Length: 404
Image 1 (cartoon, rainbow, N blue to C red):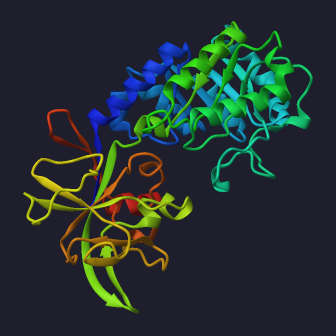
Image 2 (image 1 turned 60 degrees about the vertical axis):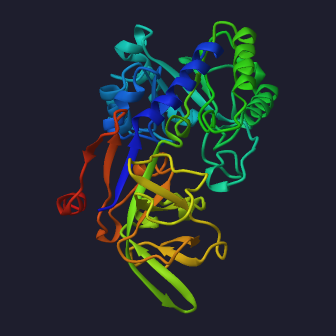
Image 3 (image 1 turned 30 degrees about the vertical axis):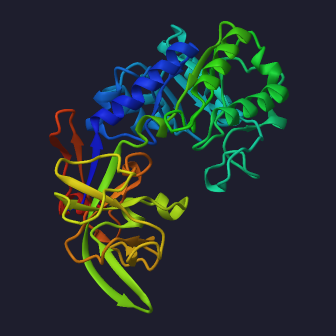
């Protein structure tokens, strides 16, 4: 059966780097649950994170129960009944519009935790400065609904507001953050100098644990911010950086056949149901033919998947035509476009082969569905001693109960 496998050691490796950034940059680094919320793995990250950020009530409840520390919440809009619960657990509540803050300001400020100073409130601002390349993930794209338009900002922070929140990045480097902040500072410096300001949230999308990220440049920038805005606490809320290169999705080939001039392989997983960003982003995941005890008379691939099990060899698939057998890898749902892409392998695939889809922990497990009634992959954790611990198995009841 298909299975997501997450590496404890890889999670810890990422977490140690993020803790170093927090320490050397003198900032708070939170875990963004929207990217990684596998409950059985949160205990690995808890000692390293200052807390977590949530996009709504359910993520906030999970963070409060499983992560502890600081809880920052932002949503494009709040329901009154959710706010009644959030004011009991959140430390920061950031609002997307002045209208929502005006509607709920009296209620929020009257809450006991706000009165004691345990909870603060902020506004998300759209700095109107895009550095990303994918409109789907660009909060500053034309017509964006995320954050308050610069032209609509007041000259001073509204009563009760002590925080500012900007989030513009997606899988981007330190220079993108620096350029964005300089644009924000140029247009909104009057709010950054407001005496009521107590915290500044620089959002997520920081690719800190990706190879080649300029960590020292980030640290230097954060230190400069702390000196320039003395007394203002600074928060980062990366999601992918905590879990990038920590997990894989193992799939089994169910069938191989020829049709309309292509070799096709159908897996027991689905791109649309189990790796939706493959279609939405879109992107092409690395896939490895996985064999026991090196049964292929070939050298192991130089590149290896994020999670490797004892006794297995991994052969990275290439671009179409690069090796002996080119095949279109498809999912098991009935969606015509449920396709991972065209890949080349060192031999012809056959039913029963195992393929390992790399880097499948972040923005993957959190977005899976039971579309088409396709069986949902299990979730396991590879412990430091090499043991696989099952975290979750899904069955028909999960599909049935989800739909009422």
